[in-house]
Length: 163
Image 1 (cartoon, rainbow, N blue to C red):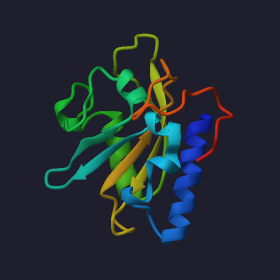
Image 2 (image 1 turned 90 degrees about the horizontal axis):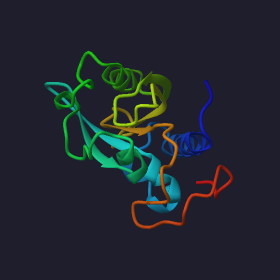
Image 3 (image 1 turned 30 degrees about the vertical axis):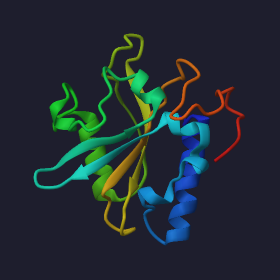
C-alpha cells in the first residue's frame, strides 16, 4: 500500500514540525500557506473526552465532495457507519493512544459507489505537543474538480509545489 504524493508531502511536513517541536505538532503548527493547495485534501477532527467521540472541525473541499454531506461540527458517533464499532473510529483511537501517524486502508462510506475503501493517513496533533487533542486525516480521494478552500491555484498533478 503506497501513499499518494499529497499524503507523503503532508507526512513530511508533520515530521518536520514534530522535530521542531520535539513532540507531536499542534494544529497551530499547520498554516494554509504551508499546506497550499493541498489543504483541500485534509480534514481535522477534534478528540472529545468522557465520553470519547470525535468532532469534524475542518474539512477540505475535496474531502467534502467525497462524503455524504458536509460533516463540519458533527460528532462521528452520530454518523451512520462511523460510530464506535467502525474501523475509522478504531483507527482514530489507535492514533490517539499510539501518538503516532498511521496509514491504513478502511472501508469507504460515502456517496461514490465506485469506491470500496480509502487509504488514509492519520496524523495526531497536540496543543501541548504530548497528548493528542486533534487528528488530521488525509484520505486518498482523487480530486473531482479544481476547487479549494479559498480559491487556490488549480491542482495540476503530483508534481505541484511541495509543502
